[in-house]
Image (tube, rainbow, N blue to C red; front, side):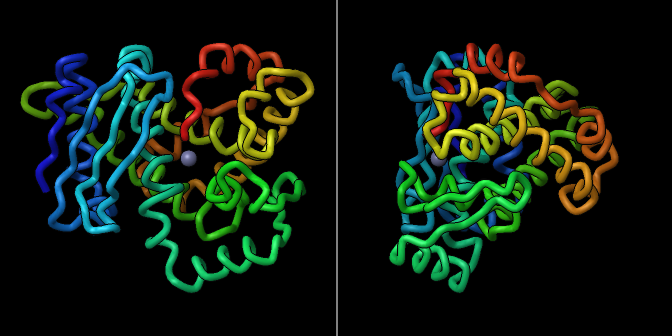
Length: 262
Ligand SMILES: [Zn+2]
């Protein structure tokens, strides 16, 4: 697999090397993409990132990232974005298996309701702006497991390279690891709390709901930490994460409002 990060490198060398290293080392991405290549493009749109021509459809993996997102967010958050695009969407379609994919299709076709067992909140996925998002955020669903496991794989890779230089440079910091975990939790919590109308999360009482979902999924992540990663540093980072108050959610949203992943 050839990974072209030339356009990202023009904006930030460490972020481009950090992305390239994890994509190159991720067993899940390597197995999924096979002989296809991966190319990054940078544009100036408000949407932080998008993915096109996924390898599952026979083409190369092409990811576009907006320049403001690259400049404003850590490698950990950029990896969190990439994890959402491939782990909640394209790779998950194949990765969850035909039976689970068929069950999702049946749920949509029959306008069925599903629940997130951690918050007890219920959803009709076909009514969401993107039904994938609901499946990816309800604990215990195959798409949730797939997304969280890929996040765990990325976290493990960041952890492994915290002290191992690549081409003479250290590419990640402890904060990148925390940022990746927080990015995943904020993504899941904001989708659940707003039924996938995520900009609402900045407004009370939705910010309170985001805080509740964040706490519930963080508690479960702590319970499941050993299954998410066998790496001690990742497990310690998970153990060290704290709940957010509704006002902390509001201020996080202030800087996050534009980085809600498509
Ligand atoms: Zn999405």
